Length: 253
Image (cartoon, rainbow, N blue to C red; front, side, top):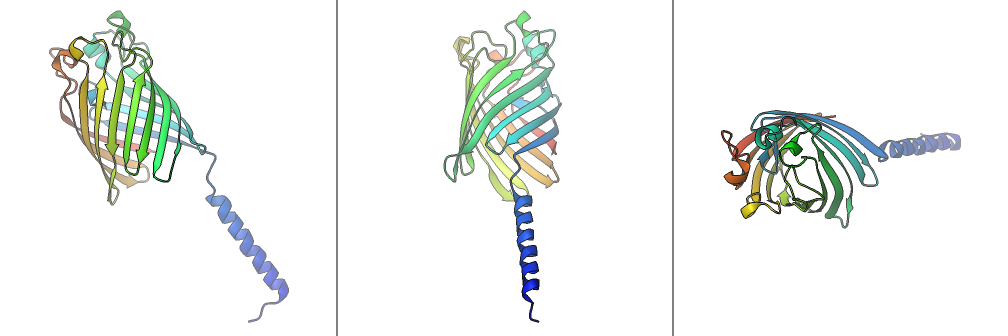
């Protein structure tokens, strides 16, 4: 069949229009806003239990701009302020954070930002100092490996004279296929001005994750530390850094 010039013009216009629409639909949005809900058998922060080995409910919201700028908020129930510090109040943690991430090369990325760990209404200052903590952080990622350094700008989680507390961690994420990932991680926490460096410890974890699709994911992690009883154990409770398995479930939307 031979098309007339008019038919060719109409066909070309339709094809060009379809291509333009496809490009518009595929264009990266200026920003994304996402939410997450989760439950965990034991909320561990840098290997240390924040819930005295009990479960936690958690939720968060994240804003990410295509430029690399991001903001977020996240919350969880906790119990360490009352159980281990001995304060009369402090059962909630709210993290507020923001930063900028980008790429230096195709395989090398960076992430810099600030995070504040807020414990609304906490009475830790009645015993030591207020538990609220702010950190600056920087991370480099190469291929599957990420190294991150965090440093407190003031007192660190209810420890007096602890400004400059630091945490360094290295992790790798291995894609096992079929939605499975395996993530080994090791970190080192230091807290200045603690007798005999009792607050310093190394933590480690091996996490198996499964992405079920449609925003649902689950993890099981083997977690351990060399945290000292002298600092991280308050009788009759156990050492907050004792080894355990932690199971978590999260829904993102």
